[in-house]
Image 1 (cartoon, rainbow, N blue to C red):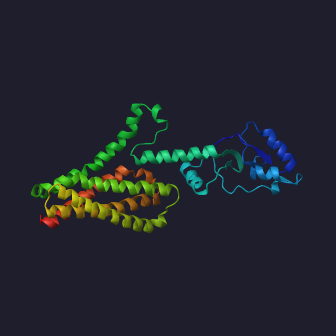
Image 2 (cartoon, rainbow, N blue to C red):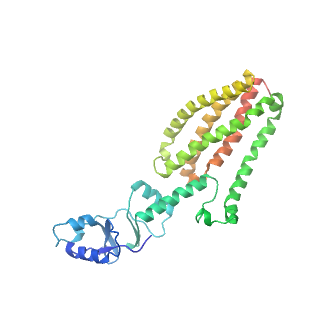
Length: 313
């Protein structure tokens, strides 16, 4: 917050308020609104345009001011304030402590808060802890500490994919061509999940999507993913044909692409909204975590479909 703001006592007349306002100007930047106070108690805000255009100069400014319905406290959590600012679109917010005006957020501070929020979400979605300083001022040691914890967690989470491969070892030995498409399939599932998660988390941050919209979100993403799945399935058929793979493997790969894409849509739509409901920042559910989850489950889907069509145990 900033503390260099202009206040006017509510008992002042329009004429007195104008003179007092002009006397407090210390730069060429003229604010659009000023605060009206009684002592130090906040009473409301007054448009500078309204103050300067008022014809009755003897009238008290208390009849011209607007009540400040939205105000924040010095110890309010930044994410909570950011959510309110994003929804209301305000350019001046009083900071009040026990009814007394102690500071304010103007356009510059509000823009800075919103920019910090976007930056933090972007860094969390990239599976790294937020940086407190500009990138070029951060040392390699600090970057290591920010990134290594997340990468270790992702390493542990990704380790279960090797267990999945080990479990279906016999299926791979029976049809070695199945192995050719593993990177393609898990990459497609992760990419699809990343797209959905990035879009949804940002929409939630802007207040465009809430928990009550979960049904609509799932229907929208499943419908979209069905169209994408058909497109990718056809691309999978073409790729298998170009590689000279048999019809059975081609069918398995194409069907798996469809199933993984739809499964990715469901997982990526539900998890961020559920975590938001239980009080966890959905940005923490970064794209790499969603991709890691879909990698392992996608492999299970792939081998289960292969077992069914190839008659494997």
